[in-house]
Image 1 (spheres, rainbow, N blue to C red):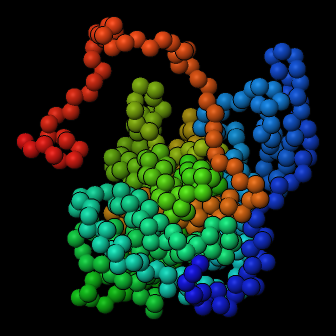
Image 2 (cartoon, rainbow, N blue to C red; image 1 turned 180 degrees about the horizontal axis):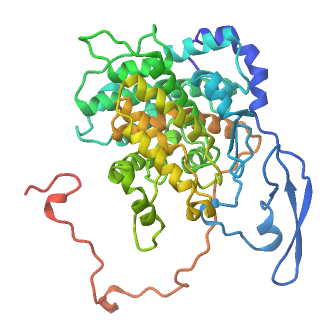
Length: 480
């Protein structure tokens, strides 16, 4: 980068360079050979790879050239798209590791800043390294004043996620000339800048929606406390926040930092495979996260608990969830990967009590959540389907206790996951062989057919043209 290096880089860049090499995934040698027999009787051999943990994988990169066949795997449920050293999930055991460290251990003894360091550099920091790193992160929380002006262009009722997609993507307009994505040191600075600025962008989105003045970060506060300061402080009052609240939010940030190759992370990697600007890649990931099946589940859990209302209604709603004829779903239960208790959910449940006690909020909704969980885990329907609570089941309760509005729940997720997204991007960019993502398809459309001149075509029985009412003109050019 053309700008002068900050204190962090002046003191540590040389020592970190060799350590960062440990974060580069190294392709293992084949551990076995799989033989595939095709319908015509021909057999081909494919290499099998075994990672440090997890099921072995068959390498099918040469499948088409050897056989003329592709594989079909909608949703990629049985497909590995990359080699990674970052995060490991064992869904059957309910295990989640960040660079080999159990999430429960990190949640108890570590911090979000330390986890960020761990993901970027591949090892836990010394006290000096951690202090310098957090100092740098806080100093990078400021954003360009022109970007602040960008917020004024959004409608006052804009969803905060829509604003986040725009402003994170806009970072690419301010940081695109001064870095080389092929330089590991530049990728490191990109990661630090993105993760540091995400809380600021989110806080400004929140305050813009409320019509409140922007609050700049303050170097006297920690990274997490700065986020709360920018969200909730007012010029008229001193800012005070209990350390229990800061620790709770710090822990939530850790729990959501990364989660292997989910929809949003895969989106970041796919966008990055074209060598797109990394900030634009993360904006694409935020878009994927916005979907209710991915990042919006914690809000859905809170709404569900409020709908259930009290413990007497639990049996009725469990019956609804089991009925094929009812659209009610038990939100916060089950996971695409976990077939056991989500380890993050256990941490969140314990945290709920301390936060509700400190905020003096009524814990009726927490008690209802626990009773619902207990009832579901005794029900054969949920036991047989291995439907256990996931991290979303308790997150919304904590957010509400912290006075974070439901419209900000997914934004919080995006801020927390930014370290995972950008480090996944860094890992991909460090690979010696770069391939642009290009999935294939099973085509079931029309075969080749002749073009018919317009005067010879028959009209369809029902017109397929969508007629928009005049007042819904996209650009507001039509007056009504």
